[in-house]
Image 1 (cartoon, rainbow, N blue to C red):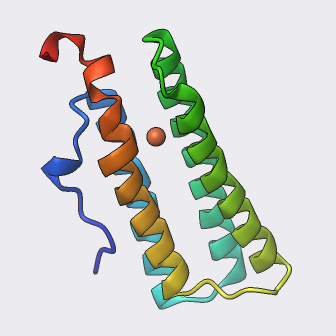
Image 2 (image 1 turned 120 degrees about the vertical axis):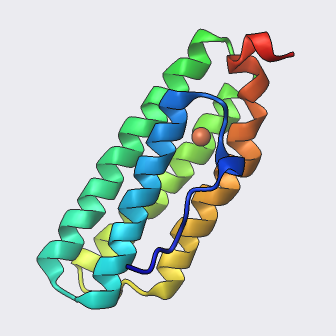
Length: 135
Ligand SMILES: [Fe+2]
């Protein structure tokens, strides 16, 4: 199976729980990619949209509550970025369900780039706040 995203150690935020959630998100996006490549079955696409949405929600909430516990200074702007992504996912899903949009490689590229960019820039910024023993 050709994967859209492969986990790389440089993605790690040195937190096993968060790293595992990021790996799971990568898995879901790779499954989405595989479904888009191999079929256009509406039920299957609707199901994977739903899975991506609910797992993303779950992960963002977990991350935000962890950041709240350490009084992360950039929590509010981080939350806004999360919300922006959720809104975008909802918009894509709604358009797809209404038949106004076909899932395509451009959308898959957006999902991949957003996730990797977010991990590498925004999530990495909180590393030193959650791993207090590190510095
Ligand atoms: Fe995040």
